[in-house]
Image 1: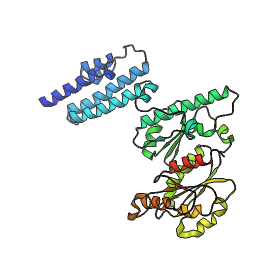
Image 2: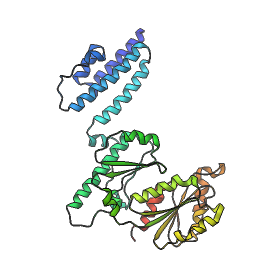
Image 3: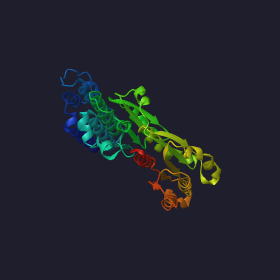
Image 4: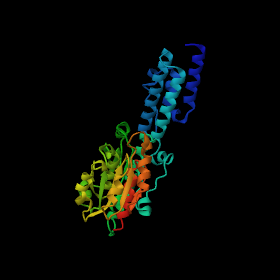
Length: 348
């Protein structure tokens, strides 16, 4: 190694000796010995938490594997520093007490369902797998506490939507990463088409959920097959909140006979609201609203060619609907459409 590289390596070692996460004696003995092998057998150091000790020693091993690559010329000191800094941040987050780690990035609103009529839901895009897992687990812990309190009282049971735990915009890769993180307070289910992750608190049994009374019935319709992911986001959200959902897909205005054939289902006496997802010209919500007596929630999608402007043309069409009783949410916002529909029917 050059003198410059050795100086960089010395500075790097000093940084990690002085970081609090690596002040454990076993780590310092490894660094002082000059290699992973020299300190690997040092298991005599006492610690209040054996798991914490193992985590620190494993972290030290990772650090020295990277430093060995630097010494062999397979990795630059700068790249090694970046990788170790990133690993250190992730490990520090995981090593904190659950409550402390959560408060460092989230301030959960567990009372939202009681106050606003619909629970807080995680928008997963932009969050790390560790953050999402920690939030999900805390939400499940809160549901478990609510169920325990309910079991000890003579009051009416907790309604399903108070127990709803969801994360939206979870792609396949993010789900795979989250599924590898242990969760203490429940189990997760991935809804691939809707890109939704749902969690069932450990205090709830499948049999109990199936026996609960449904919270109204909503039809979720969409114009084309390409709109289905947005429609499924709405449908899964409603089902998780305790609603019965009837899906009517691929009934766009290019073939009006398709929506006409669906009229018996749209006009069923048990239907309380209709959600309509459409891209392109966005005309389907107006057609539906002119045929049914219940509220229609219009969800514009970003489907279409150039002049659709990412769903803007569909949204403007829906906002300018001449049919009465159409409420419009944001582009591709199936979750928002579901929340609005739920509020429309929740007082019935």
